Amino acid sequence: MTQDQIILFTLFAAVFGMLLWGRFRYDLVAFSALMIAVVLGVVDSKNAFDGFGHPATLIVALVLVVSAGLVRSGAVLLITRTMVDASRSLGAHITLMGLIGGVLSAFMNNVAALALLMPVDIQTARKAGRNPGLSLMPLSFATILGGMVTLIGTPPNIIIASIRQESLGAPFGMFDFAPVGGIAAISGLAFVALVGWRMIPARDDSALKPEDLSQYIAELTVPKGSKQIGKRLAELQGAADKSDVAMLGLIRDGRRVYGQARNVALQAGDALVIEATPDALDEFRSTLDLLVADSTRNNLLRADGEGVEIIEVVVTNDSRLNGRSAQTVGLAWRQRSVLLGISRQGKKITAQLRKTDLRAGDILLLLVPRDTAAHVVEWLGVLPLADRGLAVTENSKVWLAIGLFGGAVTAASFGLIYLPVALGLVVVAYVLAKIVPLSELYTHIEWPVVVLLGSMIPLGAALETSGGTELIAGALIGLTEGLPAWVVLTVLMIVTMTLSDVLNNTATTIVAAPVGIQMAQTLGVSPDPFLMAVAVAASSAFLTPIGHKNNTLILGPGGYSFGDYWRMGLPLEIIVVAVSIPAILVFWPL
Image 1 (cartoon, rainbow, N blue to C red):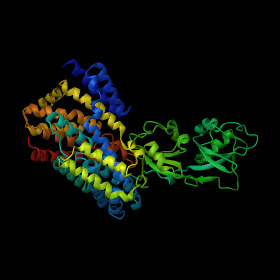
Image 2: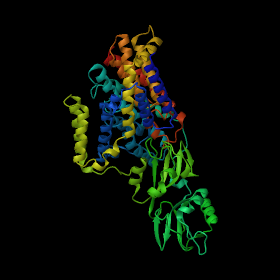
Image 3: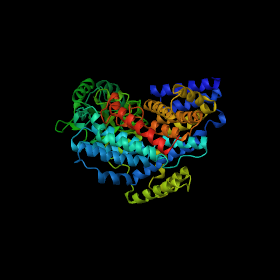
Image 4: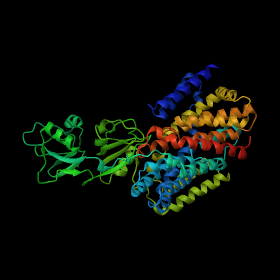
């Protein structure tokens, strides 16, 4: 083993270890590894940033913008609102939502497809009086399965196509994945709809609702002669944190101002507006020697009273709240909003909320000034769990959006235009038609994924150039020595699938695809079946909530625990392998 190989293997081991640890975000981990590789000389500084201009990176970014355009035009909600009915049985609902999710995720980013359908699924479950956890996992798995069918359905397929172009001279086309991916998706959807959902552990309704919380908005008056007179509102924050109350603002001369009076000196007669449980309210009042406001008024108001509203959201991987607390991000003073409650894997948290570090998958109740919900949701980078239609702004252009996208896909499929160019033209057309506002163009791109791809592609290329992928391929072939080529193909698929269950599927694909090509060359067979095996396997992350973003998104809203996923996920992965290997051998013979 050469020195370059040792360095690269060490770097990849460190990257995978850091991704498993989860302490730092994956884009920072990947970019740091790239910079270290450049400093150590295993990646040429001239080629260090080639990954950011790589076709795979561009396609992923463009697909996200196109997905946003389809959502904003109302094209997707046109389907969901007309087809979803709460009166259907659970099995029928899961079947229908699975089909919708599978079809949508074949032509738009599968994370975006789930983000759009999840609020619809939750609302339908609540109208039907059943736990959303019974249908959210099938929906997540369906959107993952649907992404296998086309080139643009999921990042692994895009990466596989680009690697094939670099290694073999031509990429996979838009629907080259359809024969194998389609059979895997249909088989998986059938299992999920007919049998799989029955394997989800039964549980009580764990969703966090406003009525579950005894939080109130209260007004406490500063009396004459109070020691608090002359102090700034911000100076009372220590007492507020100790009592676990949130100060929303101040009332002076009958005018209420939320979160905008922190530096105003208190006067006698001022009323502090706070959010608290009754016990916390009494503790805070006693500590500061405040008075209950005008006894002729109803001083304890429900949190959804005049001027404020409650929204329900889930923390995403890329939210500014992920790994941080509401207090750290300045939720109260920056957005005049309050965190009312947290539900984490079915457990409700209602104490020390503002100091609790939040995680991806947590479901939150937020108290926000009325008519600001859309802005707060966007600023936090969270996903609303109510179908508010916040992103649907151009219903009159629904068919224009569909036509532009359909035309681009058709042109790219017949080789009339290069796919990144076709998608780029759609983005330009969406902006000119004001389907996607120019001011929001870059907000829809998932920049951490772009950085991850841009960083990992040069590292993967360096591993291949140094002979590292040949070593891995040789080791796998050595383990299967004397066995038929289809057995070797199955082993590669299982190894890739296992890695994808615990690592980012993008990172898994970048490493596994060149290994597959090397294994095929060593065996003297076509590399295409090996690339197809990697494509399907890298997308089949069903055992854990960390293998795919979709599984993480449903963790809180579904009230799932880490060990719930494998119950339906393990049989599903076995089915995917069982149907994919014969399909690969038929459509992409060795």
